[in-house]
Each structure stands twice: as structure tokens, then as C-alpha cells.
Image 1 (tube, one colour):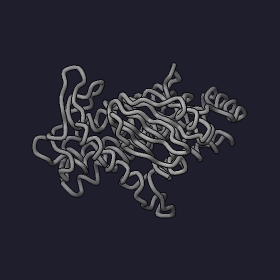
Image 2 (image 1 turned 135 degrees about the horizontal axis):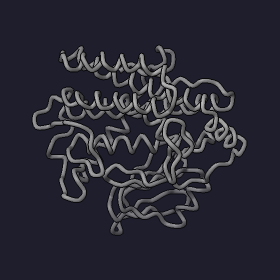
Image 3 (image 1 turned 135 degrees about the vertical axis):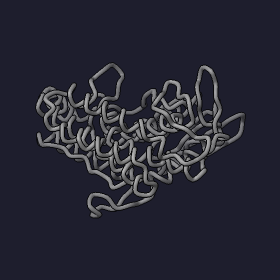
Image 4 (image 1 turned 180 degrees about the horizontal axis):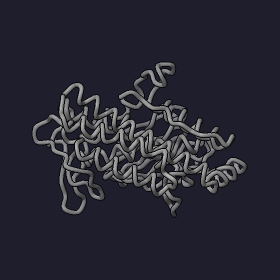
Length: 332
């Protein structure tokens, strides 16, 4: 099964028997049997017919609505059917000790991944700044167990992010491609444009795997519950940013797979990938998500999607059994 991305502005996804068909200006851009589709992702102004909507709901295939700038608007799905699990999830959220333990585990995993990515680049391209920040991240990791509240854990996460992004630009080796810090809504440079797009894609992956487990994606532990905010999906995203998107972004720019010519700039919309470049990026992203590798001390072999599914499944088990949850760290 595969993820079907629709990026053509003005295209419409329609039902043709047991198939989904993407049409644009009376042309058929794609047609797939429903059994081959795991998820439908609509990027930008794409229409979904009523008949296709009913077909997708019956088949329990989620639809994700996103912008071309890297924002996930929401999902279309059947909702939540496991009421007992939802009540347990609420109880764990209200348990301050349990919630703090999960929050610390998420922050620890994120900082470890940041540290591993920087050290990997420092080995291949020695730079004192990378080593210095990696060492400072180690000090933050040592402070994390003493955090007595979510706010304190978030403070550690914020310090780590500031340190990490202050040197991430030194990992870029393509002339003309610069990164001086994180910005978004809209992104002001090519690197931030690709990071925002990638994070949005992984966020919709996180939404899907959590909903498949019957978990409510809006009821998080590190991120606060807020109206229309997928807090639990954002929790899972924090663990996946560096292994999936940051590493892919650096690779694409450093190999010259993406260059300045792939981007367009607009005063209101910021910087974003051109239409054909977006399609190429999605191919690179899919390849990254579906290429098998070993993780978990070399025991498991699977893809990033398998890894995300396992993270969601183990988080569900922790909620059901009132146990600690430790995300599976990846060697970068």
C-alpha cells in the first residue's frame, strides 16, 4: 500500500467504481484501486468529491489536508471507536506524574537525536562548534531528570532547540544555501521551507499511526491540549524530527538534489518549492520513509513508517498498563 499525494492546484479526486481518480482540466493524472492506498494527502487547493469522501470513509482510509507551505489543516476519518482507551488516555493525562514521565522521555529522545546528528556531521566534517554544542546538549540531558514540571521540561527542550539550530547551518555545504535559524509561517529561506514541509508530512504520519491505535491525537503529554491542536501527534513528531526530516534535508541540499533554482519567493507566502520540485521532493521523502534499515540495537528491521507505528503501539501499551514509555532511539 502507498500514500497518494495530490499536488496539482485545482485538481479533483473523484470516485470511479472501486478506484480513486485524480482529474485536472479533463485529464486523468492518476488512478489507483482503493486497496493500494494507505492514506490520501491533499496539498494545496485540491477538491475531493462527495462520492470519493464516502468511499474513503467506508474503507477507513484517512485523508489529510495540507498547505503547500507546510501546514497541516486536519484529517478526515471515522473518528475514535475505543471509548475505554479514550477514558484511560484522559486519566493518564490527568495523572501529573505519568504525564511528566512521558514528557521527559520525549524531550530526552529529541535531544539525543539532535546530539547524534551533530556528532555524526562533526566526525565527517570536523567543526569545533558542532562538538561544543553536542557537549552542551549533554549537560541539558543531565539536568532533565531533575525537572519537576512540564514547564521545566519544555524549558530544557527550548534551550536545546536554540543550541541545535544555532549550528545546524554549519552542516550545509552547498554554496548559496544558508541557514541562520528556524523561521516559519511563512518560511523565509529554502532550508526552512523544506523543514516546514517535512515536519508537516511527518505530523500527518503521526496522526495516522496514533489514530490507527485508537488514541486521540489531540490529547498529548508534552504539548498542552488546545482547540484543534494535534497535541499527541506533535509529541510523536518531536521524536522524529532529526532522524527523518533534518537528516533528509541536509542530505538533499548537500548532494545538490535541491538547489536555489528549485524555490520561488513571494512577499506574502515566503519561500517554497516550485511545483515540479515539490513533486521531486515527495519522491525523495517517500523513498526515505519506505527504505528498510535496522533499529533498536540492530534487532528490528523496518522502515521509518514501521518505526513510527511501533512508537505509537508502545505508547498505547504504556497508557493501558500505566507504565513508563521510552521512545526507540535511532543511530544517526
